[in-house]
Image 1 (cartoon, helix red, strand yellow):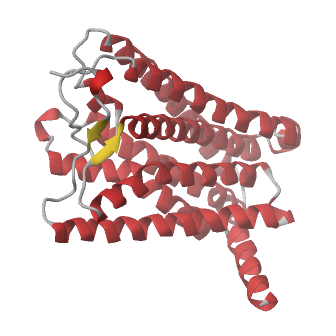
Image 2 (cartoon, one colour):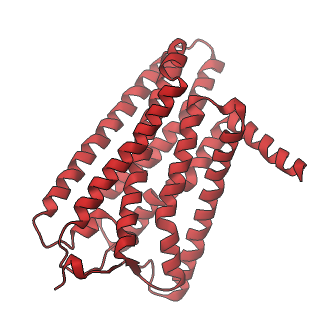
Image 3 (cartoon, rainbow, N blue to C red):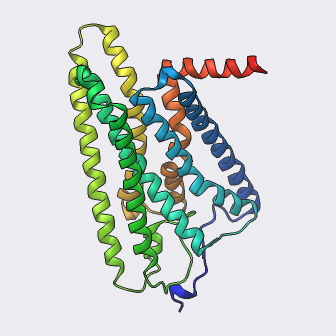
Length: 310
């Protein structure tokens, strides 16, 4: 038996037992990670450099890209390094940092997606008040609130989790540090405190989801009242990328946490975990750039300028 004071490292779940498959995992995750860095980096650079994209929608998109970079950088580099060096080890401090930054990114990103649904609601349902309700100061305050919410939620969960006595070994059945798997190592009833924090977080997440759904119901009603087909298409084109990102974000998380225990298995859990931790940050830039003509034009101008300058 061991307690938390004697644990200096945790053992993560490997993706495969053979070195060949471990290397395959390394190259696959490295490719996804580089694609996420490139896609989100281009969105950040384009919005920061183009004066025509200084609107609330693109300001929030820039923040979303920053959080996507943080989210995928929290998990993928350590996982790829472990596969490359054929090890399972992560330090105690590294595990705590991974949990903190993953919760921070998840919470702040979901809060930001909720704010972005409000942005689309005001833009389509109350266009005459858009400048008043979403001025530059209001946008900065809302973005700051999203980041602060993520920081506070991550701090509470990390402190609560790692203050628990751990006496059931140090092996985690996940390829990255995650609170439910840490709680399984606890030998104290104090873990109920963290469970209650998780319940509160789930309730707040559900509240944000309801807000997003209600916003889009109002948006849909407003769009269907637009007389011209061109107007309806333009309104939908600004909403569909955000709706697609929300759907991907929520659906993958729901599959992870709401799937029946009877169909759970280590290999399935690994695949599902990849879907909600690795795929969204890599796919989000593609979703936004494919449906947004303004962003594509600004990106093309930026690339053309860079080549001409050389």
